[in-house]
Image 1 (cartoon, protein in one colour):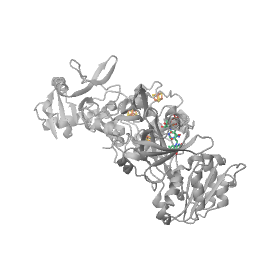
Image 2: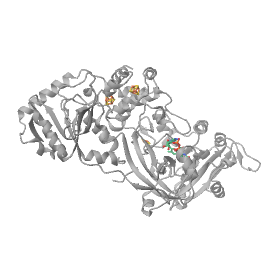
Image 3: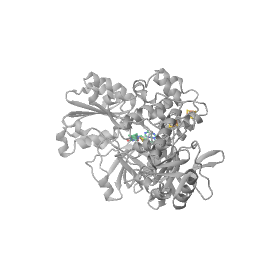
Image 4: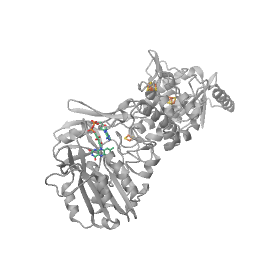
Length: 340
Length: 279
Ligand SMILES: Cc1cc2nc3c(=O)[nH]c(=O)nc-3n(C[C@H](O)[C@H](O)[C@H](O)COP(=O)(O)OP(=O)(O)OC[C@H]3O[C@@H](n4cnc5c(N)ncnc54)[C@H](O)[C@@H]3O)c2cc1C
Ligand code: SF4
Ligand code: SF4
Ligand code: FES
């Protein structure tokens, strides 16, 4: 693996140079929020931020996306074009939990039999530059409970580790190596590796929260019907914030939109927390209350995904914990399930 | 990579109004491009997404049989946006079709066995596909005795009437058509599907039941088959859940860890026992 050392104050310049050649998305302050956005001349990418409010899944699985277009002809409505091809891009500053969410989403969108061309096209053309968490930023972080690590390259093409006075850049994939030329020629030595290991070990210790997320699958297997489910949902407003911010939630709706003679078919994020999500035309709804919807959310993340892909569909980013307006805490729910 | 979300262009070439209430019609489509017809290789029990640009898509079971080349048929009840738009359409209109989607009736498992088909109402569609497949030419030899029990509320609600008559002429199907209540012209059987199943009493010896219909019919019919000695492995049905993508991505149609669109819609009762009861 190629490794480079770069001076701390050189990083912004490197990002700027990449941005002159390709589209770069980086965390930027937008009003009160830190969000990923296209880096334009004069933008200051935040290299020391904690994490963005929104998850970067938006780059491969946008909140709204055109799937196809059609137009009115004498024969009726006819197909007039498929998806736009994605352009090459670099996402800078993805935290390891979010980078790992791409690995989890790949399992779903890039399966053997059914492939999702919209997701795959963008994913293949995008290089992920991940920024290790030398100091896990939030009290709500729990990546280590769900197979993650604050210093990890899972899902990344390049991993940057803050060694204190400089950054260690590891070029994980061939796609990452294509950016090697921007990073100078100071090769990393064994001392840098050692320093990284020490930082990784320390960062792991700094994660305050441990939850038994990996232990609850057998409990969920046999407790679909359990009075516990009657106790967790009452406060829930069905607002969908938890699923929209979640880096691994992937549910979507498909809808059509027409203006004059032209139209397009769109996909939009949807949420299992919404009552209409499973409602059939007849009025029948297999999930009649927020109880069934919350059970679905918990089951999907900690059982169904494990059944299907042998992985938990949560990366421990803590967003749903931080932003739920009524303070429903998935960590507490996992904890409670482990005691059923 | 073929984009599974882009429908094949199809032309509506024939519309048959199936019932007196006029809200169930069979739509026959031909592929606009010959090579698409080649790609649309389906097995009875699968479904397609009928795609109307500007309106949306609906998952509908394939009602024709692969032994009827040149077209695909769907029998659709007028319900909401897409199905209503479809019911407004005239022959010659172009629209879209995705698929074929889902698993299918387990043809290989059915081979060499006696087959009991039980259908209620317009859920008879993919069963019709299966029957036409099994009785087509040499296919007939691959299956044992075929018994069909099909019921509707009244004679005007029976679908595929011409075909029912044709099947009744054959000596290699035991066809039992019933209505809950007949009218002055009805000469056939009267009675609910579960009752008729009990009267017909097909043997469970080397036999499989394939059943589709309204939930209430299924609820009352299953005990009849348990009494006749059918095991849960040998009772097969098809599930319905709200769908969008049809390929296991949009997260809408799961029952437990199975996606009805991709892992179903066909399941045996034994398989359903292992899933949650959320459908
Ligand atoms: C595997 C399968 C096979 C089916 N086969 C048939 C058939 O042979 N004939 C028939 O008439 N109907 C069938 N249905 C039901 C049919 O799909 C719905 O009645 C139809 O989608 C309603 O769409 P709409 O646009 O008219 O209604 P709206 O209420 O306007 O539709 C909203 C959208 O929700 C989804 N939706 C709503 N209800 C259902 C439902 N019950 N199942 C799946 N998706 C739904 C569809 O995407 C639909 O376009 C089948 C459903 C499934 C899942
Ligand atoms: S964010 Fe909280 S209130 Fe909103 S849907 Fe999720 S659990 Fe319910
Ligand atoms: S479930 Fe919550 S903590 Fe887990 S990945 Fe999603 S938003 Fe982050
Ligand atoms: S319809 Fe999208 S997952 Fe089944």
